[in-house]
Image 1 (cartoon, helix red, strand yellow):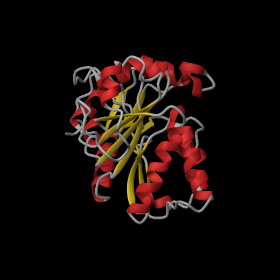
Image 2 (cartoon, one colour):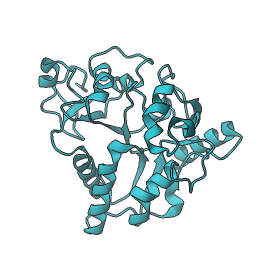
Image 3 (tube, helix red, strand yellow):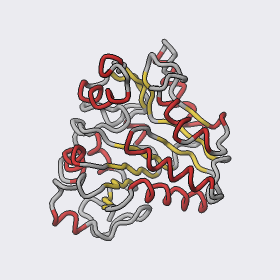
Image 4 (spheres, helix red, strand yellow):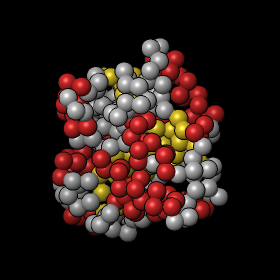
Length: 266
């Protein structure tokens, strides 16, 4: 795992890196994509790059990390709606290349199995972006989730429901109790992972990712076992990490593992 301190614009740096990778691959990539407030800037910059003719999604395949159960795709609170609003409606991606776990399927076990099969058929995920929750969750993999679990249904922690209540008109009462999520086992199979973290409310999770033990109590700590993973964070999110550790990571850059970071790839 590698740490990148970005003082200015996390979204711009992440979007610029994806633009670079798409150029390197001739525009063909399989992406894992998240939702959430931290990611809005990332998607805005991608749309700007597309409008400027600097990027294309016509050969990109996407798999979103999660989706609430019990919400239709047209619900303003669904993650499909979020992605349409922030990215898909404004770029040249083929609708058939957009994938979400089928959270409307009452047979959730089949829906999760089908999602895993679609990811496998696409050749696996090349580059996965994500955020991190206050309790260290990635996607909707809550505290205690095994690191080898595939796509599955999860009961959302109350802290997660409270954090997401701001997106629902009726507050926490309208937040679903369950979601389908890409599992940690699936996420860790991605060839490259970039996690964005912004603000003091993410500082404890980032601390456990960087200086804590590898434990399912803090799912983000699993990134220590991934040789090509990056936490892209601002100073507030890194505020609990010791200065000596940050010094070891000062030469990290996206796409290139640190040579001197104590948790980076040697």
